[in-house]
Structure formats: structure tokens, C-alpha cells
Image (cartoon, rainbow, N blue to C red; front, side, top):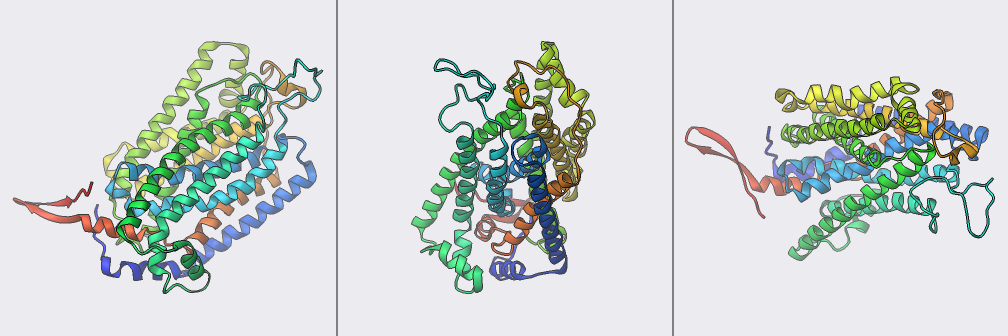
Length: 463
């Protein structure tokens, strides 16, 4: 369960792994690069054919953006939250989660077309006078200044900047340690970003305080941005959909997928990346418990959402259930249900499976598949629910047919996901995927000791 790395050789070993270009890594980088090109082709073809006058043709693009955004925005929370709880087991996964911050740049770029295609709040066909303006129903009452575009883009940009700041503060000691030996672009980045870091007590205290403040702000910001995005790009596009539970489902699904991708990354690095000496089974075991709890939270909030509309029995509520769950996107919902709850729950309830490295990674993969189905069901459905004046209707009058992807949609989906993986893989060659200072610090606090006839882990608690 626990590993005891050789601190004296750790820096040299991790530096060599960071600079290495093994064949599997090169193949993965090439494949994801090709997918990125296909995604650009699909985007250009969609823009040339349909333009940005309507949100409907961009449903699958919106689902892809949301998928990437949910994973990469919540992934840094793992490092932030487990630092707050002072969890010793989280040390090997901190940098794995923080590196997803770099994909925040992709989130900002992908969000720009959605902002352009998003329909206006005010009804262009309404008779407008000085006393009245008919507005599409949304969270923006009377359309405050900049709503919704300014608030949405500031939220997405704010998450990207804050998460990058967390990564910078966390990686600064490691960059300072390697700035004298690193060459080329890496050397320039290390020397520029490490500043005057020399590891004094004052600098360590400042880093600790900075990570705590940025982490608290990031947690508050991500909940707000999830609420705004899910309300604007999902609920407001389906007339009459009013639900305070859905933004919570969105955030819970985001956290579930983020934990899933972190566990998958840990397993790949342990199984094929040569990091067995640094990634024991304790991070998998401990993180899988959190993943199990989030999985149960997901089904609870889904039940709360469904039962409210089911017992409401209003026509609009019944039509929304038919559209998103029981009729139009019923198959996608079943994939979402089984992969986000039933199958991960069946995997994670067994303690021997949770204690392994492969079991939590399999549950994480299932959560990612379920999250993709969730985004397709919600955002493709929302983008194609109503057009024109129907957006300003008081209720959802009819249940539309499902919208299936064409070749450009497929290109944009696989291209967007491939672009995110490509950026993450490239970032692992810029910064080490293991937080050296945290693992070294953890090695100083742990040892194996004997009590009577048993041998136990002795763990120091500095605070």
C-alpha cells in the first residue's frame, strides 16, 4: 500500500523520466495530434456550412466543450481539497491533478464560438418600448450589464488563470531545483517562473498561505461558474425548465469525472510509466472512497431532480422528463445512468477492488463514459430544443426528436477530446508529473515501526 522512495535519487530519476520520449508516449502524442487536426477540420466545416447564427448545429461541440471543461476545471480541486484536509496519501497525485490547469487555455479558446452562437436574451421580434422588454427566461433578471456573455467568459477565464496560478505556486520549488541544469525552452521557463525561490522559511510559509488562499477562492469560483454555465447553456435553452438541482448535478458529475481521470492517469504512470516506486496503492484506495461517495451523491441528486418533476405533473415538467430521460434521449440516459452510477458503484463497493490499482481506474473510466453521455444528453438536447420565437415560450410544448451526429460532429468530439489529451501529454514534458517537494516532504514524515509482534506505518503529523 505504501511506498518509501529513495529521496537522494528522486530528483535525478524524475528528471530523466520527464525528458524521456518512450515509444508509447510518442505514439500517443501523434495519435492525439491527428485527432486535434480532425477536430479543427470539423470545426471549420461546421462554421462554413452553418455559421454562428443558431446554437442548434453546435450541440455536439457544446457537449465536447462541457466535457473538457468539467474534467479540467474540477481536477485541480483534488490537490486543493486534499491539501486542506492534510491527507498524506494525496502527495503523489497532486501534480497529476494540477497539470490539468494548462488545458484551461483550451477551454477559453473553445468557449469563444459558443459565446458567439449563444442566442440573445431579449426577443428580437418583440415589441419593445421604454417600459417593457420581453426576455428569454434565464438566471439574468432584466439582463444586467454584460449578461450573459461577459459573466460567462470572465468565469471561464478566471478559472483558467486561478488554476494556473495554483500550478505555478506548487511547481515553483521543483522548477527552482532544476533551473541550473535544465536547458532550452524548459530551462527558460524554469528560470523565469521560479523567480528568486531559494527555499527559505519565509518563502515556504508564503507558498503555503498562497496555495490556501488561491485554493479557497478557486473552490468558490468553480461552483459559481458551473452554476452560470449549466443554467445558461442548458436550462435557459429549454423553455420552462426551472430546476435548482441541475447545477448541483453538473458540479457533482464534474468532480466524479475529474477523480476518474486522475485515477486513470495514476494507473497508467504506475503500470507503464515506471513510477511504481512513487505511486503505491494507498492513493488509489483512498481516492476510490471519495469516488464512491461522489457516485452516491450523483444518484441522490438525479433522484431528487426526477422525483420533483415526476410528482409536479405539469405538462412542461413531463415533457422535459420525456425529452431528457425517458423518450428522446432514453438510450443516452441509460448509458449515463449505468456508467455514472450502477457500474462504478458495483466496482467500488468491494474493498479488495478498492485496494487495487486497476479497480479504481476502471471505475474512473466508467465515470468518464457516463460523463460524456451526460453532456451529449443535456447539451445536444438543449441546443436543439427550441429555435427562434420558441425560445421565448412559457413552457416546453412538444417533445422534439433526437439529433444524431454527422461526420463533422464526430470530428469535433474526438478532436476536442484528443486536443485535451495532447496538451496534457505535452505538459508532462515541461513539468514533472510528480510533485518532488511534496513527495520528499512526505518521505520525511513516514517510516515503518514495530509494536510487539506487528509492523506498522508510523506517520508524523507536522501540524
